[in-house]
Amino acid sequence: MAHHEASPVPTASLRRPAERVARELLGATLVRRLDGEILSLRIVETEAYVGPEDRACHAFAGRRTARTEVMFLAGGHAYVYFVYGMHHCLNVVTGPAERGEAVLIRAGEPLEGAETMRRLRGLLDRAPRPGEIAGGPARLCQALAIDRTLDGVPFGTGELVLIRGRSIEERDVVRSPRVGVDYAGEAAAWALRFSVKGNLHVSRPRPG
DNA sequence: TGCGTGATATTCT
DNA sequence: GAATATCACGCAG
Image: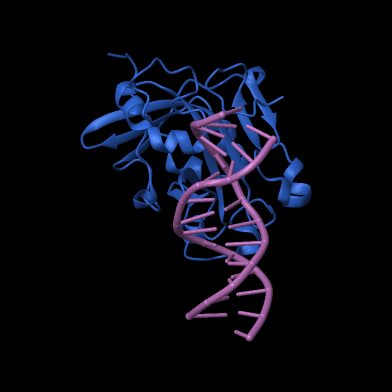
């Protein structure tokens, strides 16, 4: 048993700007409670979607639809969307209510419940390589059984919890452009992808 | 390197 | 309403 109590990421800290939250969530632990079992992973890669002025953000220009509605809740809620006909992606809503910004959780390093995550990923028959379980936003959701039923749930009170981790040193943080947002004009070049330098669980394409 | 796959947003009638 | 374009991806090959 660890000496220090596991302390949740304070909700107030999630109500700050997405760029800052994305940086600070590196090294934090994402906990998923699934049928009483605890699955957890250490967050090693995130992306900030900074709000109305960000063309890559689903809530660009304040666009408010059935899908994006939870992005306008106050920071600290989960925003889960479905894309490409088969994939889910998990975001942490950030900022104050009505802003429409979020942080995409892109990759994690399995901690507790790795066996169950392997099963959920269909990788029980062989030894997965680093990053194969949760290296990528859709893989991470599959490994943690996250889908739209979790859209809008608050972090910290049930199925999803964020736990503070040892903070990542500045020299170990890599900033690079976000993945798959070439359509977003000048925003495509903004360095809002954060990852832990050299970590093998970070998704492709590798930053840098 | 292609492409599945279906929800979503946008643009028509 | 309906047609169409697009997509914050992953895997096969």
